[in-house]
Length: 80
Image 1: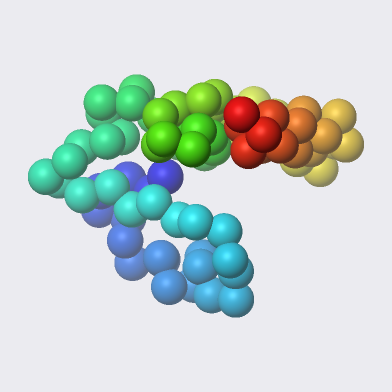
Image 2: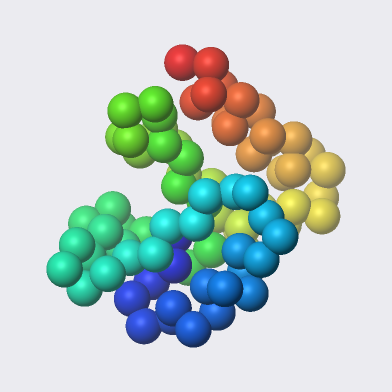
């Protein structure tokens, strides 16, 4: 999720990618209502509810076990 005021990089972060990118807006303030921290990956269930959160600052994805943990979290959310 990208915080309000950081929209300028959206086109470069999403270029050539198919992953969803959520841009918060002042009218919704999702960042605040979900208590998001910088570099959180917010995993939603099929109904759009928060299933889990995985922070990429705390869990460097260059470490194989962290990458595998996030992958499993995503697969679990998709299967439910």
